[in-house]
Image 1 (cartoon, one colour):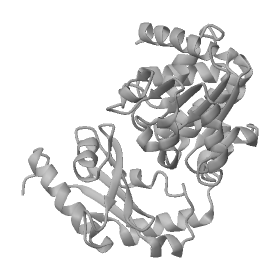
Image 2 (tube, one colour):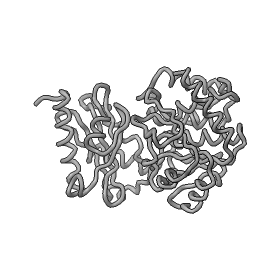
Image 3 (spheres, helix red, strand yellow):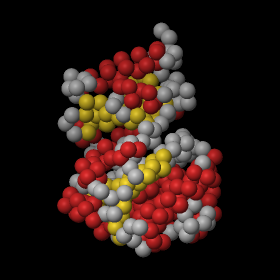
Length: 356
């Protein structure tokens, strides 16, 4: 992998040198890895390469992770929801486009047509399965890393002006990379590789304050989030005889606790603390026509197969996501629980996870 990264870094170096206006984008509902990788790349390009760079998110960053961007000029961050004209102008002027932490422009929501319509060279840096390679000029993609932040870290460390010395990374980039990797591994609880610890060690040695990052990530929630967490676990969580736990958040429940975007991040992992639970699903209403679905599983049980087969999604073997549409998949949103039980029972029987 190191040999490939070195070659990729050389190619990236040439593309950057030939570019003056650069756009960076990521997936809809940007999470910590999307924010961390995009902010890290922006600061590297601006501080080391002196380029005109803009980040274009499909929506604004949720308040739970917006601190990642606090040392970034607000004029450098646009979003397609509130600033469509400025996003269109930025893409029109771009001579290089980076897409981070998503395997296709189809996951950039309202920015998809802008990105696909640009004639600029396009670079994909991602760790999800099945990249849409044909849509990109250059693809750096492997699922054998914890996060897009880890993949980007290795690329930046291989760039000629960094030369393997993490101390030469811009400090904001280093902090953002550590933050994004921490969120995508659930604080080293899943999708962790030897290279993940090597990255963390290198960033710690370079002066990153991990304790401060953990404080911002996990100790600054609103009271409402914890109260909803308790209600979900006590009132809402269901566990099937075959070891699938699920929770469904509809508009009424979200409204009851005043939950904001990003505040349910990580809820899907909690049922996995129960010994009999092999897989956990978390559904949250999103707009008028679908639930957003998160799927997590213990080793030996495929979240990816569940998400790709039944929820129009996919991802990693033990961490995936998708959507459940109504009335296309279920005639009524109230039938979400019944649907989950039917499809997971079929999957577990088929895979030999469960016998009645």
